[in-house]
Image (cartoon, rainbow, N blue to C red; front, side, top):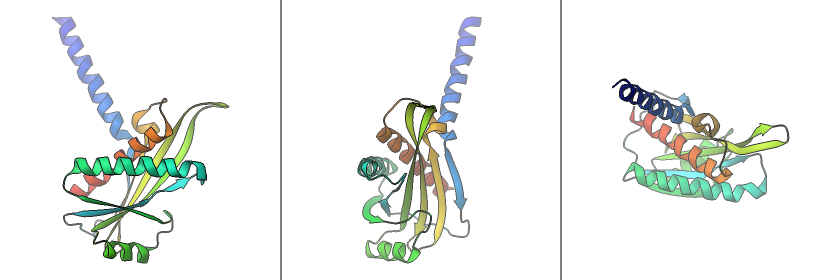
Length: 184
């Protein structure tokens, strides 16, 4: 009886620990509580700004990012997803351009993303490439609503896997946090 009860509590403890670790990587960095976002029907995603700025990693990053966003948008329900190949600086967002592109595409909100790569390891031994995916959300009027991020190293604590898989996990985590905050 005691071993069954003990194994039950250990299972509950480990399950809770794993679930909480998956949410540990996401963060709400900014939220403008004065702006209310009504029902979002169309969301527009720009290509992510990639750091470090190396041309060889940009195209695989874009592919993994847009694959993850389209998959996550399907799971969120009846939201139209638009992809824009226009690059926009994450740190210095041109709100006039965001407003214009949103109005031209009948989008309710726009997401300006950034993918920052970093290596995990000791000295010359690199175990994995991890990413921090950050997203800024703007409404169709060009107003800054919120910023979220997801750190794959903190969130999953995984040391194995490809860089594109890290981008997919980080993107889905950041979108999940955006969706959660929009519903609050």
